[in-house]
Image (spheres, rainbow, N blue to C red):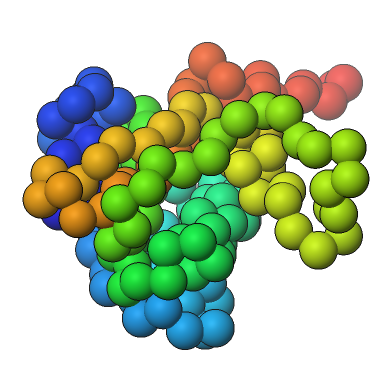
Length: 163
């Protein structure tokens, strides 16, 4: 599975996965919408790490961007993987296209942003980390991103009202 391959490459999820979900998506116009629903379902489960539901909107947006990129460029079946522990959520989208993704920051001067092209910029801006790797079977690639879960240190202190 794509998640396990990425996890094997990097220490993205430190402990035992508290959430692990995998879904196959057909290369249809509905795939991005289906992926958003699957993310919401997975992060809303009782087994999801604390704080995961708070990141659902961001996770749905970023997964939707990766799925849309896969549909537009790979035009193959996709595999969505979701894994997470108490600190990090990992999302993977695997496709069957052998070419490396274009992650160059440069954009041609005549590029039409009204049509497309903002997906990876959104992923870069909102994800805690992101990247890609070739699939172990050599028949495609895996795009991935992580979202850090809120910790007690990141939580704001309660405001005390005057007595």
